[in-house]
Length: 458
Image 1 (cartoon, rainbow, N blue to C red):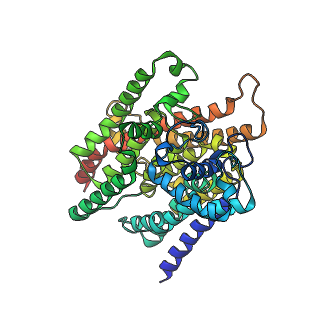
Image 2 (cartoon, rainbow, N blue to C red; image 1 turned 60 degrees about the vertical axis):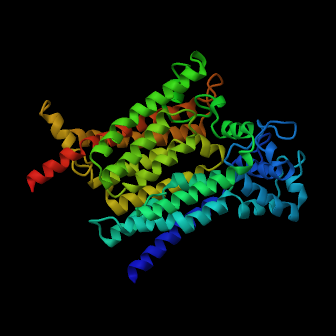
């Protein structure tokens, strides 16, 4: 019973942190002419309520797609329409066509908080994400109950997800199913998809226009500052200006496919739960680094599977999750979320350091690099310094992140280089993500050798 009290306390801590962050500023507060994500959510209510469904995704005099045009799937549009009916009942001015742009009031903010993404995310966290985290951690083997509870705490305190869902936005984890349940799930998904898309299947042009909005090829290889290869490479080589768009797409596809291919082949040939977890990480990280038009928030799609291996490699996982949050610094600063970012990152770091004693788990075995190191020592006998190198790299990484944060907050960039600090944050983060991609690939590719070595020792 005491352990369930601890678990309840941990869940309440996670919810309290989320609620506290939601009290801070939000994307675009009082910042014309676009007003940020808050206005995007309100504007979608305006559009879906005042225009017929066939005009939702098309550019027109009443629907300027350059001003927060709908670029989410139809289900999101239906939710906006439902909220718009509620808004119409409370105050029609909130969704008046054209004249409601940039509308902000205390009553409207309360309405948006109770009907927007934050509420949806909170409900999803309560019903899906948090229970899934608890169940997953309790299913981990070779761990004490207290360690499992500590693992839940660290995952629920991951700052990147909290800051984006409850700070930036105004607003899963996997399990094993039997074949029958999988078929039921597949049928449910297909039926839901057909139901949501049915109004847009009536004409081919409708379908194509929605797909154009959902897959923004016209926006280019990248848009905002994002910590992936293409944005970082543009510092030295302007790929967007040199190569035609279709060539950029082909190059992006090839690099993405080739970078994730080795671990996927290894998983097919030697499947195991561990290989599956780490392959989730490498595939997600490959897509973030090399795919076309990646958003900075897409790093969360990598962070989720990294949370799943937090208990297996706590030192490297903690490091990665800190870097992933830091990589979104320009976005978080734009939303005036500096203080919540610093506080949540420190809380997460302290929780991980305390729960897993991460600084004591940097040996070759605990970094899961022993098999790789043994292979290298066949050719370089003195290759025994890898853990020390990783420890030093971690220290350098933390120092650089702190210094760049301080510089970004306190210094004005040169007039000729207004985006200097944002570019530096993205470039440094990209280098670290490349390092992590190599590291996770090594773990997967040398995993079978490690198992054979363990069997020989036993």
